[in-house]
Image (cartoon, rainbow, N blue to C red):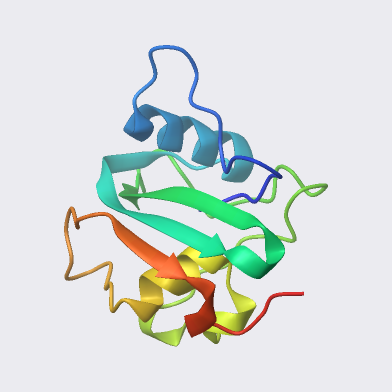
Length: 130
């Protein structure tokens, strides 16, 4: 889950690992607990014409079904809501957060790829987000 904030996607607190941050953010924003949390990929997304630059760390994990129900929108002022969507049924790239669109464009498959190398994504390959 990625939350778009002007300069960063999430804040890692002092002495917190990326995985700990992902667990905390998902609990705070969706009210669910994750297990088997690990690094998935990192994407350097650049859109020069809009002075847009995000370095996004993607973390993956599994829903802890013993301690969690369905995700809830605990921050409605920031998010429209949560829903389950199959990885192969995601909306078109032009409707996605640019780093997620870049990851999809590069052929990343959450269920096949593990711990991928960092990659760059320049916006001329993607439609403009307005």
